[in-house]
Length: 147
Image (tube, rainbow, N blue to C red; front, side, top):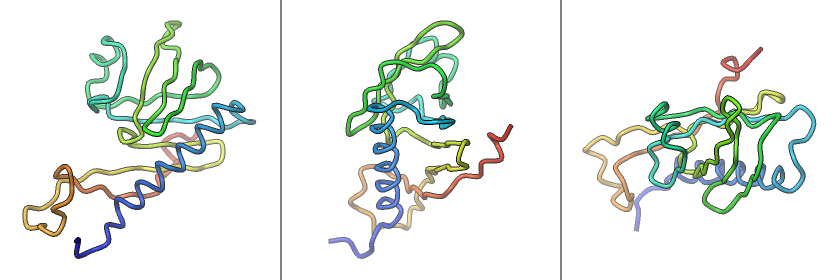
């Protein structure tokens, strides 16, 4: 039994659930109005799928834009598949929710950021964690994506 409540992981699950719900709505009904998304994800994640040339170009992280043209959006409990256009070349991607670093909808000034920090060695209360990372959740500043 753990000695503390892991609010960081609980918050991450809730925020990823929000992204899942938003993408499922878009999967069913399309993007409403001016909504569009900037999604930054870890290309090194074991479940991320992208073309070799994209992985070579973005060996650690990549930001994709879901706006005017996208195809084949398919959302599951662990992530989503989508085909996006890269220089007139449609490329299928699979982005696991656990790989997402930021999710931003600048049309309504909404954003989420998932940060990962290495645990200190003296943090022995989190023995149940699968890996040695600690993640903090926070709302992201949208100034980066303002026009």
